[in-house]
Length: 112
Length: 118
Image 1: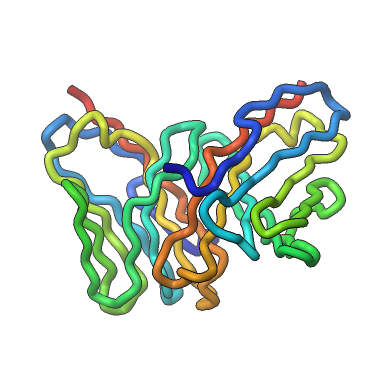
Image 2: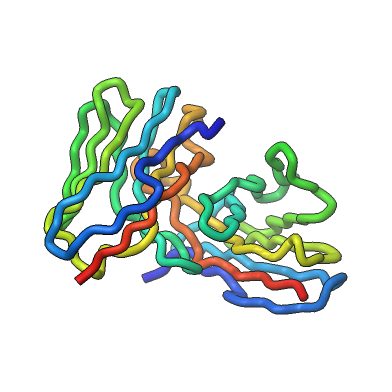
C-alpha cells in the first residue's frame, strides 16, 4: 500500500473557486514538502512544514500540518489557470532527513 | 534560478543503446543526490540514493546493473541506463539538497529527462 495517500486524485474547478488537497500517512511525517509539477517537467518547491500544527502561506496557497504530523492539507484560494498542474506531497518518513517518499499526486485543472 | 541542473532534457534512442543522464548541483556541493522515476500520470518513485565517493544505495526492485549510478564529484551524479529497452522509457528526475542547510531547506529537483526507447 502507498505510504502517502493524496486525495483527490484529480480535481477540476472553476476559476475563482477555492480547493483543498490532502496528504495522509499512517506514519509520522518528520518533514512534509509540497511541490507542483507541470506534466513532463521538474518539480517546483512550494512549501515545507516540519512542526505539528504548523501553517504556512504564500500568495494564495496555504499549507498545514496537523498536530499529530500525519496529515497535511494544501488550500488554494480563488484559483487561477496558473494554478493548474500536478501537486505532490513528499515526506521524510524515515526520520533521517534524507530521502523523500512521495504521495500519489493530485492533478488540478482550472476552467475559465 | 535553478540550483540543480539535469541534462539532457529529452532523449530518443534505439533499443539496446546505453543512455547517460547527468545531474549537477550548481550552488552547493551535494554529498547525496537522489534519482527518481516517474511513469505517466503517476507519482515519483525513488530509484536510488547516489553517494559521493561510494556505492549508490538502490531501492528494492531496482536493478543495479541496469541503472548504473556514479557520483564521482561533489557536484555531479550520473545515471546510465544500460542496454535500454522500450520498458525503460520514462521520465527520470534527480534531486539534491545542500547538506549545510539540511533540515531547513527542501530538496531541489532537476527539470527531468524524458527517455524514449524505440
